[in-house]
Image 1 (cartoon, helix red, strand yellow):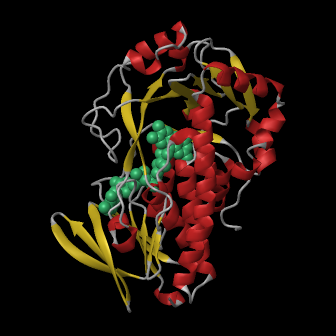
Image 2 (image 1 turned 30 degrees about the vertical axis):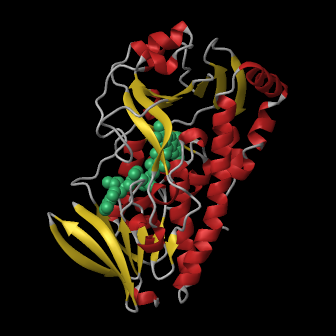
Image 3 (image 1 turned 90 degrees about the vertical axis):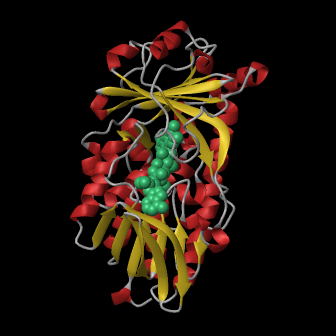
Length: 404
Ligand SMILES: Cc1cc2nc3c(=O)[nH]c(=O)nc-3n(C[C@H](O)[C@H](O)[C@H](O)COP(=O)(O)OP(=O)(O)OC[C@H]3O[C@@H](n4cnc5c(N)ncnc54)[C@H](O)[C@@H]3O)c2cc1C
């Protein structure tokens, strides 16, 4: 791949696809993005962005714009959902910026998406097409041929590298040796937003609160400079009908939270949940992260398309941003060895994503512990200083995906 003809095609204009387009453009590549939806918009509400993502947004020149609407929470507090008792607190705020070199933020997904999309649309090296579904890719000596469907008509687009950022139901993951389906994890996230006054003292406006229970956990945090509170209740249950895999949230109606989801919570939590009629079920789907992510002839999967994971470490979008930056860095570093660059990307990222997925599995286990195990958890956490709990996260939040 010689420098002047380096044409990148990205399937999907979600967080992964936009971050990839901007990362490649920053390194001198020209990029075309194909987005299936007729217009750019994000569903869902809050997202936590740790320093391993915000340092990348800073390099893209976008951190200031994201911070305009974001909140910088002062801590993450773990509490018992059955009593409200605080079990542990991990310091964030300025301490996080000092410790990990970039801020820890909570942000509305639509706000983050707007900033990324605005930057992509304004970039002279990026062309973005909506209403364009990528159906697959073939590979030949001249490069990659992407099949793109627009208004029922199918055409092809030539490029040097195709990036599959088309989410958990990726069409490009169905290409050749990469083919494998996503699967329902058995867990459903119920998401809602509330006005701060509706949360009373239960959810302090300056922190992330995680209420733990053997059957569920509820995470609450402020968004949009504290104007709204994001709520996510996650429990093990059958997926609600009409909202299955991949199109999470899109096929389901908003409504009341079924009381069984948070049974065992304090009256205060029950009252908050029952006072909202905008809960949206979001089945959590996963993609086997051990399967291949690259076709060395010119295809790389990133974000949920490669390794959709449960939200137990709040790292899905963060990993998508890391993937995007790491892929662009790997390809730029080996201008005449695309296959080597893609294999390097896959090897490095797989190790990292596995580690993060293990942390998520650990969180799920510990957060949903019951009986003596939960008592042991609380006792151990009570002995830890807040700074030592933060130090446990150095490997995760202190990581620089472009330096590896
Ligand atoms: C309850 C919950 C809470 C979460 N909280 C956090 C958090 O706090 N922090 C965090 O980092 N992550 C979090 N996540 C995970 C995060 O939301 C996802 O990992 C992330 O949004 C994935 O981004 P993506 O761009 O890879 O995929 P998507 O957001 O799914 O984007 C894919 C894009 O591709 C388009 N597309 C699909 N098919 C095609 C096609 N064939 N052709 C063209 N375009 C196509 C879609 O329209 C879409 O625009 C959470 C997830 C859940 C469910």
